[in-house]
Image 1 (cartoon, rainbow, N blue to C red):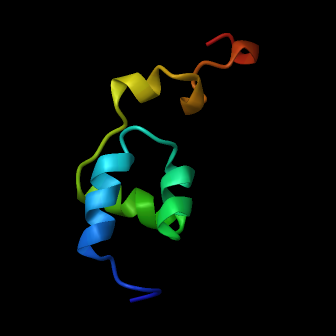
Image 2: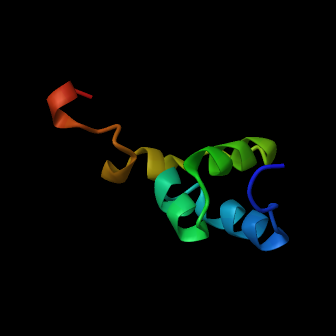
Image 3: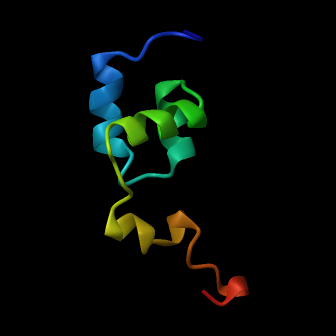
Length: 67
């Protein structure tokens, strides 16, 4: 295993934060890589919330792309 093991607190925080925040912000908060947060969210079957996906923070509503 590379790095430090995932703690139960990491799991609790990812469950609470991942659906509502950018993955890089969650990773920074946990002092983990974004790849670790993506892997953990996949293992926990987490998805981004509808509110997050429709927010400007998601990056999906960029006027220059016409989306």
